[in-house]
Amino acid sequence: MVHALGPIDLRVERGEFVCLVGPSGCGKSTLLGNIAGLETADAGSLRANGREVRGPSPDRVLLFQEAALFPWLDVQANVEFGLRERGIPRCERKQAAQHYVDLVHLNGFERSFVHQLSGGMRQRAAIARALAIEPRLLLMDEPFGALDALTRDRLHLELEDIWARTGTTIVFVTHNVREAVALGDRVLVFSSRPGRILAEFRIDLPRSRSLQDHQLADQANEILAVLTAGLEA
Amino acid sequence: MGQWTPWLRRAGFYLALLALWQVLASAGVWPSYVLPGPDAVAASLADGLRQGVFLAAAAVSLSRLAAGYAISAGVGTLLGLAIARFSLAEELLGSLVLALQSLPSVCWLPLAILWFGLNEQAVIFVVVMGALFSITLGVAGGVRNTPPVYVKAARNMGCHGWRLYSRVVLPAAMPAVLAGLKQGWSFAWRSLMAGELIYFSLSLGNLLQTGRDLNDAARVMAVMAVIMAIGLVCDQLLFAPAERRMRAKRGLS
Image (cartoon, rainbow over all chains, first blue to last red):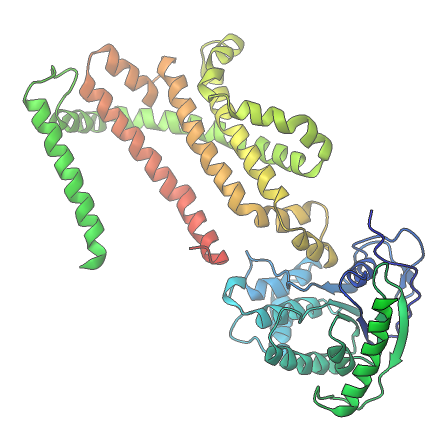
């Protein structure tokens, strides 16, 4: 049995954008899975929106690295999936889905199937699908890890824009320290397996942050130092 | 011109075969009740169609096939889902289904006759047994090989219970399920013909047998042609469109 995660004490405020960085295998994905209610912890308690987490809920949506769009449905049907689950009638569903498809700039691709979309487009569609059910918490598990730098930079801006507009709380996992500093209000550094929180950094730089900005780079280096130290420990 | 070439080649090939057949038959190498020429077979075919015998027989065969197949599809899907979902079911039933699947469905005939007597039920039973295990294995395999991330994503969005199966698991498993359904259909058709060969009521299988009783090879071959044609049409109407749509959606073609 693999002990993925050590004891974690974590508190996230509503509307915050929190980034979790750590080496591969440190249990970050396990943590997200627990928060989403898709996995259960051996010990401890987890509360979200004032209630104990007992299982998955559309209030806490998890986005996977591989987008996980349903290949037998087109983009429109994928985005509408959660809405249909909720019993929302067809007309309203269509409108709501369209709104989110527009939000992620996928207009014109509503009838496309997954195999017709690039990696970046798939992630955007997955984001639209998650946002369509208006969750209070968005959990993102290295969503841009498999994308090229240009697409990733564009998606950073889009994500920030969406975050600002919807006020969703976001917990974002990445192994890319610069990405974490560019996006987060706070960055939490994890040790290697079993993962524990080594340090917490508050990022006060003004938004939107450029990856080229030297203040960002300084902060990132500071965090990277802690991360590396944690690896060697 | 390019896209017609395969069709022309095919047509040429069949014409050559027919010609060869006609030559062999006319040469009298074998007596005409053993090898009738294509002209005799065509005549018998036209005769049977005109008299409505072939149509009536086909209707009987197809209705039995539909009834038996419907039962196997229903039971097979449930059984397949059970095997995929419950590890106990997999442990106990998995190998049993595999073993039964390798039993040629025609082997069920003697038992069916002993149990039901020589009547409709026995024939339909054989049809059901023909298709059941292919469909079960198709569904079980498809469901088991569904990437778990789809189920996680669906549960996350509030989907669970039966809806999870009907909206996510079965659609995700569709390629394997379709393959199982298609294989089940052809096995059912085969076991139906075997059953009808010995059952006296009017049907396609029965026509084959009566043709033999009358030493009428032309009739036998005409009925065989009808059986093949029905097989092809069924595949084109039932499975091909579903397969095409599925491949288009997933970018497989």
